[in-house]
Image 1: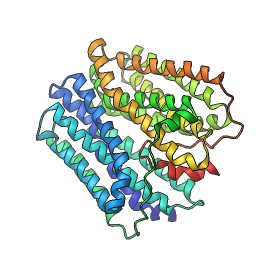
Image 2 (image 1 turned 90 degrees about the vertical axis):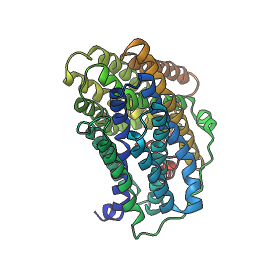
Image 3 (image 1 turned 120 degrees about the vertical axis):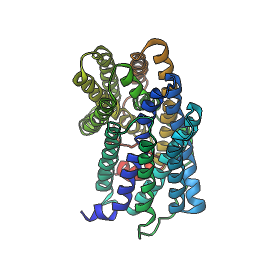
Image 4 (image 1 turned 180 degrees about the vertical axis):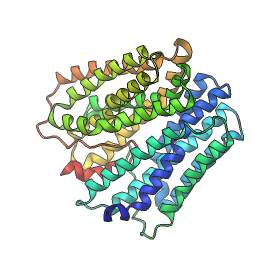
Length: 406
């Protein structure tokens, strides 16, 4: 309880940030469809979000060093709030794309600052519990953000205003805390090749994870509209995906620590292909079947990033862990930037099931590459412990470095 109280301001900021910024993507998809945006334009909004996210991950450590944690947090939150509020002032997909870059910048920048602050306050004794609470808070906020879509009216100033208020409110807990701000961490060098050098399979795994996660989160609402789901049902559809991924973390983590992680990735990829096929086949079988397929899809795909990063860290030295985490995050962002626009183009040309065909093909490639890598070298005898790794900032490696080195 004492640990929870000491980090209460940080965790409350996480919840408010998730509720405010996390609801923008599905609301944009539903609102854009109501306003006549094309499917390709809706996919472009998702790609713009992750482009802004990447810029925020890169810029945030540097801005913290120049103006301090609290001012940087306020600046990033303001960028996200302005981006949300401006939606109903300019009804244009390209303008919305610039606004979504602001929301992506906000998410990455704010999470970087929160994680830097959290890193400075945890000790070796409290790190595991702090990360556990952080994981629950982050997933809970994400789940709440998806469910909010069921009660927000599409293309409404009031809806966007509510999300902007929640995003702006995230400023108060962190900037008004009496706790002294931490020392500014050095920005990790961004060396994407480091991930490939340590584990080509892990590098491809995080790219594929970015493709599946960004496609579902950003274009999933479009898929829901295409198959006839109402706004409240789309909210449950997205929430089922998040909940399925949350439930998967413990059993998949146990399996990944016990067995060869390459086989875990291969079997998760096979399960993903099966759930993609099930989602396509069950599209007209009622909401329960569609929600169940979404939950199974989340169960199979959301652990892939953490299993891939754990496999990469098995081959890394302790001094490389922060830069390796940053490199893996960069590769995830590459897949996430490309996926929404590509998925939307395929949906425009071949129908809603094309998104899941794209995802299935990417995981089929991961299976083939995983099998080929097993012929190249054996799995290491000593492995790092599996841990859930949020895809939030380049600094997340600092929080997990000690856990992996123990």
